[in-house]
Length: 111
Image 1 (cartoon, one colour):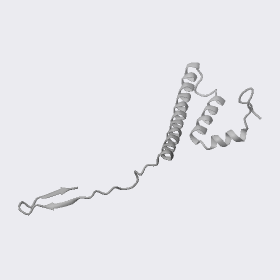
Image 2 (cartoon, rainbow, N blue to C red):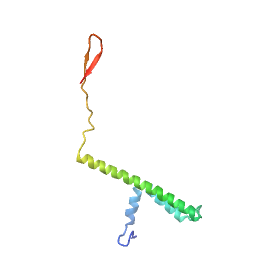
Image 3 (cartoon, rainbow, N blue to C red):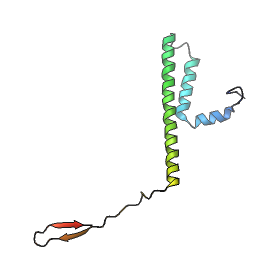
Image 4 (cartoon, rainbow, N blue to C red):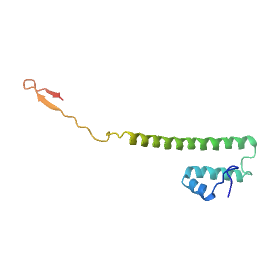
């Protein structure tokens, strides 16, 4: 079983299943592996390789933070709704009475 740290092991099936559930992240990981395994490609200079790695990591980090923020927002929203349910879904009706002024023909609305 592969180790992810000195003290902790990682079940390969577990992380494969987790990556499969996150298609964007899976695509990033596969792109990084492809890039690493094909070092003889178009990135022969260290500066070009560094630029590409920085770009990949920046994009990946942005996607991670966006996904994290969405999950946090969903969790906070669910907690808030559970703590104090809002009756905001019901449509409120406005009661209006019209009074016609017989002399001018104008209508005055009162609540």
